[in-house]
Image 1 (spheres, rainbow, N blue to C red):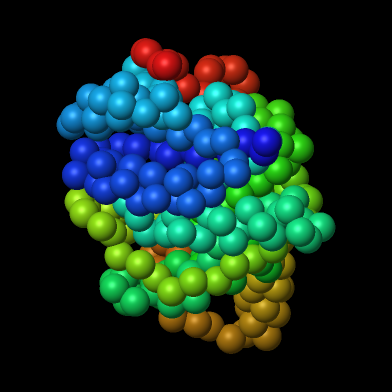
Image 2 (cartoon, rainbow, N blue to C red):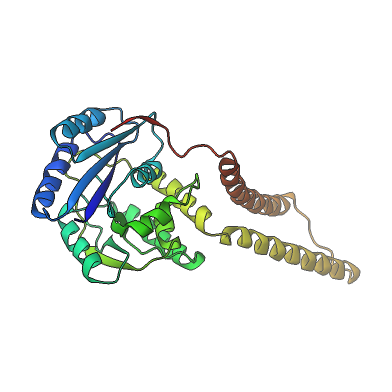
Length: 308
């Protein structure tokens, strides 16, 4: 009999966890031809998420949990869930029911009947999401498509079902700075995309503010593209060229006897402009150095406090 592991990262999800379990219970009862295990990864929650996971585990032997010593972030929770999974197939989904569990049966049939290694989901609409957030999200996906060789689809969710071979490939990537959407594309394998309408949270509030999403997008760009470094080099060469041409022009004007009025305000503007560009690209280089610094430390991606 085939087996499926369901990896569910959780951070302060006490309101929605019982609802998620009830939905999954219906799916598991319907798919009684498959063995299931659900792995709740408690990412250092400050509410009763862990207590609820323990209670569900006592009631249903298919439920397991992994609890971190502190909050390590969703990327670490995803990696921990994959690393602790045992199924022939592994699915990842959020606990807030924005990833409909009812799609799981159709996803599983696709992998069994068609020659795909994973079935991934993407939202075709962003109804209910703030417009400014949707705008920047679409710009991010377009930018990543242009500057990275990794296949990242607009509207892609973390919700997907994968064969064990693909899961093992992802687990083999032990990098500390993780961007899972990019890793999915980087490891390759054949993926079928399944579209669905956006669904709002069943309860609770999202943990992803605009600022957190912005920082997450920067992590993705730095992790899977070196284009910003190339741009810094190109702009530096361009500014050197402009400066050289300006010097030649000034010398020519001087020898022709043309006297220009010199003002401190225009000089300050130029200095501030050039300095701003230099500081900006120093920041870009600093981002890459910071990521390298964290990688060479070889710190663990997560630390487990308790698990079952």
